Length: 156
Image 1: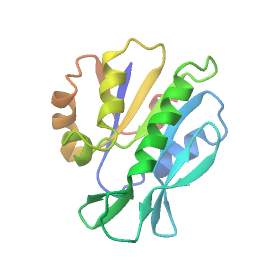
Image 2 (image 1 turned 120 degrees about the vertical axis):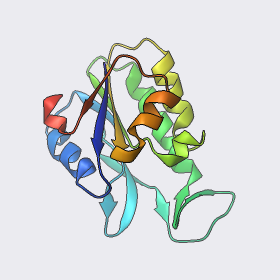
Image 3 (image 1 turned 180 degrees about the vertical axis):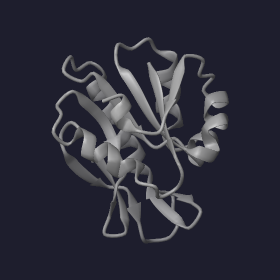
């Protein structure tokens, strides 16, 4: 099943997921929490953090979204995390935090989401999506069999 965890900007979507998964070992994927004002990439299964947002300006090593700069390599790391956990029997849920403007422009985690939506996988996938982008995400990835939720505890 594909779940879209939907909420407005800065309403605690990532924090609520973190609180729900911190003591579980059947959840994989990644979160993008704000740590001291900077977004990090958090591997749920390994509980490791990786650099994601950077302060320095746009370059060939970064992707700019509004006023924020993200390391291109972090998007590669996110894909690596998901693909490593796709075949893990202990992981029942995969979380991608988040699917947003970049993905709608075929950047960021777009290729990852596209592959997951096309493949038949035996795990539930939870995509974090901002409220105002839900319709665009559903249309972009041609989601037909999905459920929209606003509370992660309805799934986990």
